[in-house]
Image (cartoon, rainbow, N blue to C red; front, side):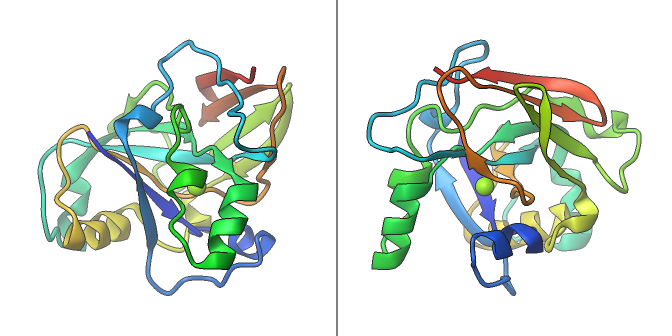
Amino acid sequence: MKIICIGRNYVAHAQELKNEVPTEPVFFLKPDTAILPPGRAFYLPDFSNDIHHEAELVLKICKEGKNIAEEFAHRYYDQISVGLDFTARDIQQRQKEKGLPWEPAKAFDHSSPVGKFIPISSVKDPTTFAFHMTKNGASIQSGTIQEMIFSFDKIISYVSKYITLRKGDLIFTGTPKGVGPVKAGDELVLFLEGEQLLSVKIA
Ligand code: MG
């Protein structure tokens, strides 16, 4: 199983980090060791002083595909959830300045907690897939697919030109604006259409 993450998929988030708005999807990979075992706390790693939350919609691939046409892409994912793409922002900034890969900032152990998956067919409003996240009870990030630069189907089609997608692979589809730091003691709770699918304590 592999984890593919899309970067800069919301205009307002690209702007808050002073990045260009992309004309093609930006993606990077995380290994399966980035998954946080369900129910476990996320321990802040000692190599960073600025771990940021990025709340995202996450698709689960349901069959193998390569070079998938956009019009058929919907056949390749059947479940959705919410997840966190934890990012060591200080390390990412250093890597970006030097033109180096992002993996030390993105792919570290437990950097991708993911919630309970639900069938796409059970999502009440497939025109929005409205999701949000609270930190210590206050809503701090929210998004809909209408704000995305690249749709689910465009992402699947684009990534599968380069990498074969397999059943069980996860696709993190990018974060809306509102990213920011977490500290020990924080609790992040993520919702899809108002239903809580993930809760993570920071330690
Ligand atoms: Mg992200």
